[in-house]
Image (cartoon, rainbow, N blue to C red):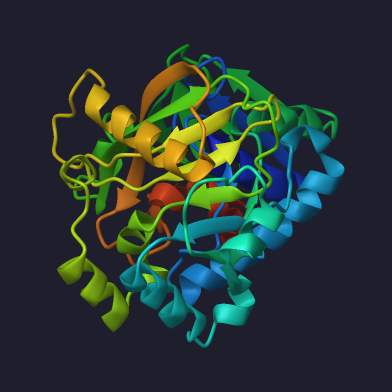
Length: 373
């Protein structure tokens, strides 16, 4: 079988991976020379802890298993099973963590409530004040800025993969084919469009009422910390954002413990992961109203610095990079992804939202199974 994959972000790359793994030939088309969107501008977290139960958690757990297996074969992914800690400071925050531990799927997530000393033994860089922490053993991380290139190199080594960068697909033709902006026609047995947050142009022509929206965020990265941050770190505002923590205890937290005004205004949570070079990737904000601002705002970064320093008990290293990114999210946020046949032999797969890096291997596996690859 010859598979045409359009879009070389992590979702598209994982579709190419599964096709090649099953013995098929892949032509992979990307409008940039290399992917530059949300697949690089993220934390690199394989984030099981906050996922909703049912299909979403099953997808995340399967993806976690796949990431680990791929990481063993492609060391350039930088896969590491680092887990995550969410430090807790108030009784209301502790109650949300205890409610999460009472979930039927808590064991599958690897949840455990740790005392402050236990958490510091697991992650000695957390020298700030907190009374307990929620540990999620199943969380993991990869290196988002290099993962795509490492996967592409592995695919090229198969001999069944062709990468065409700097080509924008402009038209879907009959007979499972597309035409790019160079005028070249690419024919296959199936076409999979994994266009990420690029929802205009061709995608709008194919699906005028696509139930997917774009979300903008701000993030930053520091100079090397100078010591290991052995786990990913979240703050209790993440309880307000991720569906796994929905409970009466969360309702009480929302009613009785207001967010910092800056965090509330920018729909913020803290997520933090250490990169291979020792720097920290820190974020994030969420902006839903269009048109998006063209600039980044300083107040959210100042808030994040305060929160991180309070957990580390030390000044944050110099901030070296700040950026904004945009991802595509299903308007029905309970859906893991939007997968639709838009023409005979042509499928659109988009809208995983902030779950793209976490769930992409399992999303692509399901596409491959459904299409009979």
